[in-house]
Length: 350
Image 1 (tube, rainbow, N blue to C red):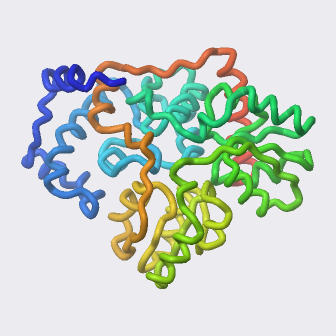
Image 2 (image 1 turned 90 degrees about the vertical axis):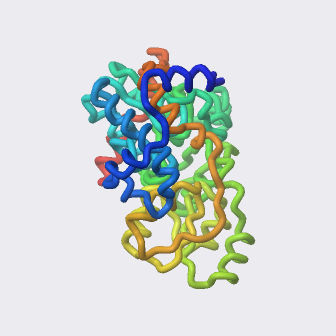
Image 3 (image 1 turned 60 degrees about the vertical axis):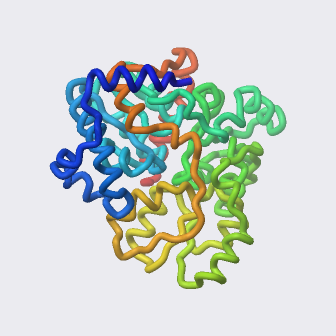
């Protein structure tokens, strides 16, 4: 657990972090990326942290990788690269920075460390876990292999390094169907997201997709009844679901795609009203770039993603802690599964 009192006291001694309207005005170019969803008062509070982080990044030769579910102040204010899990995994291999700060959840930081073992990878809050990743272990992989001998194991990147190491190849929500379709075996094991697996199974009927019964606490909350009720109330809204949602929710929606797929779809289609059936911050992060789109509907937040704050990012860069470490034996095997995904994705042109 974070010692917030000590952290805040130490940061206050090293940086001027008082709300600063003048500094906020000087950083108007950054604020313009988020002013539709962040109030001027909040920006005056955020600006000193953003300025301190961006200055410290240069001194540390650090980059910040931020997932699409980060809050706008992180996503637009300090991130060097943003995207879904696959995009961030690839960026981790390309950066020449000495330090990577992972703004997301713990398995993402492990993935960056696996792919860049020579770099210092920082996780602003080690308690930023993932209910989906924690639903499966290496023992669970062994159980599935015993049940379906010879079937390859395709594990979602939303898994621990230990699970990746026990898998044949990884996938993301954006490439899962193509990865599964490319497997040689008729039967393919998918872990740990049962709903992603069920949605993929419908896309690749030529495969016998079997799955582990895990799920995401954000996406499993949505129901088809909720979607249909909302559509009756607001029929002009385009409803766009993440494939971690149950198949019935995907069926009730107008489009389903990964976080990057959702962004591409809304950017391309520019519906007058859009409801994103995924984590809350997605809509906030693309709202300013799409002023013609009104984002409406329910909002489910990921409590793990929201553990990452500007304050903790600054503390992490200031102290170069907490550092993510993956045992070499596990890292070697996990790296193979992740690299297979990256290589196959490039071969398939996705």
